[in-house]
View 1: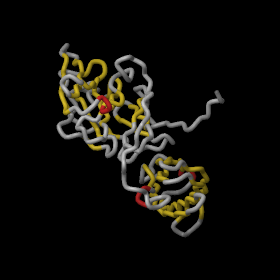
View 2: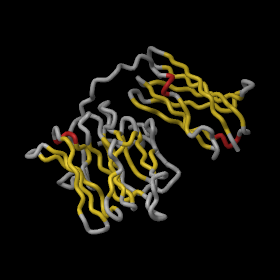
View 3: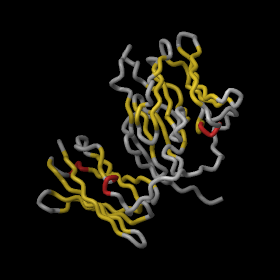
View 4: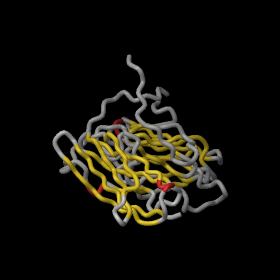
Length: 280
C-alpha cells in the first residue's frame, strides 16, 4: 500500500452539513461526489470540479419557518424514473423532499414531495424484487412514515440508498461501474464546456471550468481589454472529467477581462476564450 495522495480540496464557501455520498451521476463510469451545505447541494467530479448546473438551491421554495429551507439528514441517490440517470434525493427542515436528476441538475417532475411538518432523519430508497417497485420512504416530524413507489427495474437503480449507503450499513461502494454509451467527444476541450463561475466576480474569487477528453497540460492567461496579461495559471487537467482552477481577482480593478484557456495533450491542442466580468 502506497502513501495517500491528495487529489483536491474543495471549499464551497458555506458550512458543509452532510457527509459525502459517491455515485455516477452522468453514466460515464466515474463516481461523482455529492454533499450538502445549509441550503445547497453540490456535485463534484472525481477531479473536484463542480458539475454543470450545480449547486442547486432550496432558496426560493416556500418558506414555512425561518429554517424551512435548510437541508437536513443525509443524501440518497437512485434512478427514480428508470431512465438510467440517477436522482439526488434530500429533504429540508420544512418537510419538502427533493429529487434532482444528477446529469442535468433539473428537478424531477412531481417533486418536491411533502413530509408532514418537517423531515426527521434521512430519506431512504430501496428496490423490492417481489413487487418490482422502487420505494422512497421518509419520516416526518409529525410522527408519520411517508412512502412513495416508483417503477422498478432492478436493484442497480439504487446507488446510495440510505444514510450509511446500504441495508448492511457498509457505507462502501464495491460494485464496478459500467459506463453508458454516449456521444463521443469530438475535440480535446469543447468550447461550450469552458466557462467561469460565478460571473460576474463580486467577492474576488472565481473558478475557471473546463472539460477535457484526454489528460492535458492547461495554460490559462487572463488579459485586460487592452491586451495586458494580469494572471498566468498552469495546471495538469484530468481527461474524461470536468476540471476547475481558481483565479483570485482581488488584485485587479473592476472591468471586463478575457481568459485564454489552452489545453495541449499528447496529440492535440485546443484553445477557448471566455469573458470574465469583475465587479467591486
